[in-house]
Image (cartoon, rainbow, N blue to C red; front, side, top):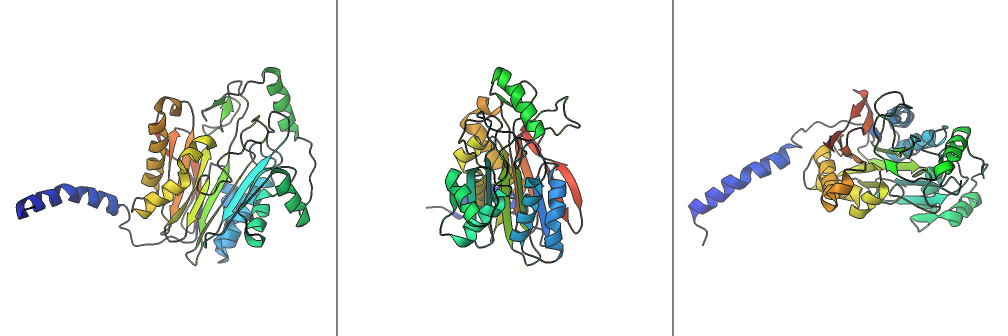
Length: 338
């Protein structure tokens, strides 16, 4: 039988753990609306999303607008201006998720400018969550989306022709590179050419509802048909309107192996702050294969129901962008190795 002295002793030992865990959310204030996005390129994305949030619009409309902005730029890592796969074909992935757990997704879609809007159309007009490849393209065309040129952008063509010389696929960590301005370069191949990046954003609107979206052209020079974590609900994006939302960037295969953003949201459900929740997901990746983890990058970004945000990455270099009524800035993420 557990006597009173033992009970008090065990309670005293367990109390600090409980206090640390729950003190992470002891602030009763709420920041809304707010939008957070991956990388410093997320700053103009947030600006676009903010147009909707500032007008007291829905978070789902805001994140779609932000993702569309990025898809419409000549960016090496997102949209039709992105780098192709090893067959010279640009394939795009995207997803979106709203406050009701409605979600839509496209994988390996070709020649469609705004895959995030195709994902939303799937979410709102079909019983499915995900369409891929030719089927996704056919659906898009049947629903009024236009077929874009299959020609590569000038930058993508230059990099692809250069890559063909060696055809060496070896992603590098997003370390500083001489070809980039500033310390926050995207992932690179060992020959110095950019590898990949992802635009993920999550938002909390003035009504207290949350949504998220992700869009990417995936890993440059990947095997044709490869799909990473970005369009996978629970991997590249997850939203639970009672708890919070999370997105990711980096080597998608590692995120998929742990259902990364779902893990982050579940950790927030248990009472952990967004930053600590992201760290715990990162630790799962590292625990699975520590030596491999030292050679790659994954970053998680999360926003909880109170408008508190946080991020954590395997390596130094992951940054995220924030915009609310009180701040607009780019923040370096904390990291495990480095």
